[in-house]
Image (cartoon, rainbow, N blue to C red):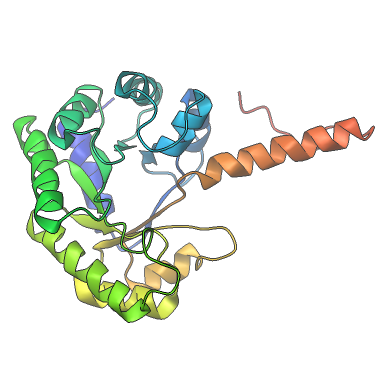
Length: 260
């Protein structure tokens, strides 16, 4: 396995490459190994929701950080690719959580702003980046703004776009290389945010039945697309569908592959 600094630099470079970085989020060792062993995969990202669900917790920092980091460290040890961790909102101390993640071998991470006052959110971004500098790595912070996640259903879309850009620019100015705007799926709104932040600065999540294809995101200038909890839901959907078929008297799918 390459050293931490090299993996961090590799992950950072993937965000500025001409091809969009596609990250199928993982939640345990076997999911990480399956994704890492898939042709074309260049890095991994964990999903906090998926890890929490695997261990019986609700999403939203309900899983103890020690338990969360234990699973992440197992994932890092099981693969030979850069790993980014979903750090949620930082567990009350974003800098310390980043330091512990880096000690576990993580070289990037998501950090939610939860629409806190902008100065507080920027301070958390700065704390994470400081942890990276202290470890002598280019920690790839995917600074997340919850502008769309926490918006009211009747909120003005133009105002939401403007606020996402305002917050995103603040995080970029603080040193974050990219900004994550979940629930941004409309083509024109994506184009507006890319224009406001710059090409290869925006990251998105692929939402089943709602998001643009990754190739079209790439054309718009999006740096990265991940899958959050949806890859786990794909797996669980396949599990439930197979169970339904068996209970009805059928068989398991003929195309099932030995991936574990």
